Length: 366
Image: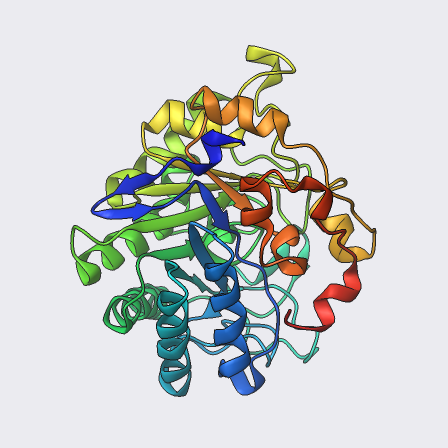
């Protein structure tokens, strides 16, 4: 039995029974932004299946254009009772759950090709591609307040933690990226610390709303959906400059997204077997980290969502890294879409029962 995955983890009075985190994955099963009983049942099944902490799919904060699909759930107004039901069902399944709070920024809306409601730091989807509008000072302030308000609602609804989506080329990440942040105010500048100020201000506002003892996670990535090879930080000094303000502002856990968890972040420093993104983030900041990216499946998740089939794969390398405390928690994505009992099967050594993933799984909530 892979014991390291099934050691408890405690943070701020919240104790997870194991190190497995259900990674946030957009499912688009919430018509008009409202999650129904099927969504609640979906998360309950993962709780009953032994996941240590469930992070929900991305949920839109109260800003026009925060989501780019009408079936992605909101996290305000009429959607909140549905999320209350999700919490109730997850806890009934003996699980713990955090919502992921999301604003897509200038991400292109595939359901509505007209962009007037999309907002971003400078009205850019990627370098050289205008989309939507640049945020005025009042828009920035309102977005920060909307993230904080949603975090407060999460705590009031009984969620166990909250996560901010600061990765993958969406709004918060668009402030980090020089290619989409051309502002001339305090939210831009030649240093990563200046471009991290928007995220830090959100974290500070969230912390003020939820208090000191409620766990706050932020998901970050080097890569963008607009540029898979991009790096916000090209060396440890830049990584320190980027992440330290986030931790100082209130982040308890850094959720470090890679396309492939086993790839070293800075191989020029520690070689091909060196620390991954989560490992370097933990080394630099000292706070717990979540690693994620193609855990338990062949191939990588972008190709998987694009149609490439994946099969169960060894987690031996993952366990070795976890044993030496390179990171603290492990995000599992596609494997949990197709199999709510993935954690129990891994715990019990039933590796021959693990399921393949292919894109057809996205058509239903299993």
